[in-house]
Length: 391
Image (cartoon, rainbow, N blue to C red):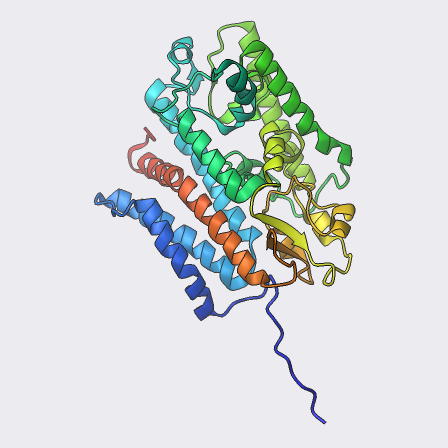
C-alpha cells in the first residue's frame, strides 16, 4: 500500500527557484530604480556608471536574499558597504565645505552642523518643555537638516522599529563589520547585566541635556565623533573630549566587536538604540519562534550579535525588545524555528510571505536611505584615483 504524499510547505531559509526569485525581486528592481533615480537617469558618464553600479549592487543582493533564503549575509554586505562609503562621503563633504573635519565656533553659532539621529533622544525633553531644539543645526536647510532626519526616523521607526539599527544606521555598519573579522570570539561570555547600560546612558543623556540645554552625549561620549566631525581643539576641555571620543571608538566599535563577535557599541552603549527598542513594540514586524520547530539547540542565542536572544526569550517565543531584525537567528537555525513575523498573525502560517513583506520594507529603506551616500562615496573614490583628490 503506497503512502499518501503531501507536499511540504517551504520554511524560512529554503532556496527559491531562479524563476520565483526573479518574480519576487522584480518589484524591488522597479522601486529602487524610482527611488534612486527620481525617474531620471543621470546623463554624465561617471554619474551614470556610479548609479548603475549602485543599482545593480542592491538588486543583486536582494535577488540573492530571495534565491538563497538567507538574510543576514547579504544585508550585512549592503549595510557595511553603506557605513564605509558614508564615512568617505561625509568626511569628504566636510573638507569640501569647511577645509577640515573640525567644527569652528562660527559654524556652531551659525547653526551649520549636520543633524545626527543619535541626538534625537536628547532633544525630546527640551523640545517638549521649552520648545527649543538643543542642536546647532538648521531646521529645514542644508546637509542633514533637523526636520528631514526627524521625518526619516519617524517613518523608519513605524515600519522597522529597532530594525533601523541593522538596516539604516550608518554608524551601526562599523561595529557590524569589525564583529565579523574573526572566525571565533576571543571573549565568549559577557555578563547579561551589561545590556542595561544603554538604558542608563539614555537616561543620563536625556536628563543632562534637559538640565544644561546641551546635547551632552554628543559633547562628551559619542564614539562616532572620531570618524565624522568634532569641535576644533582650542582648549584643554576640548582636548579631553576628543581623547574620550577616540578611546571609545577604538574600544566599542573596533576592539570589543573584534573580541566578542558582537555589536557591542549598538548593544551595550548606544542610547539611541535603547530608545529604538521601545519602537519595536509599535511596528508591524517582529522576530518570533515557532515552538513546534524549536529543538532548543541554542544556536540563535549564541549567534545573535545584539544579545537579543536568550534562553528565556526563546522559551517565550521571540526575541527581546532589543532585537535589530538583522536575520542572523533566522539564518543559523537548522529547523527554521525563528522567522520574520507580522504582528497579529499566526506564527506558523505563511512564513515566506511574511519574510518577503519585511524584506520589501527593510531593504527598500536601506537602498533608498543609503544610495546617495554610496554613490557619492564611489564618485569620490573614482575622483581620488583619477585626480588624486576626493574634493
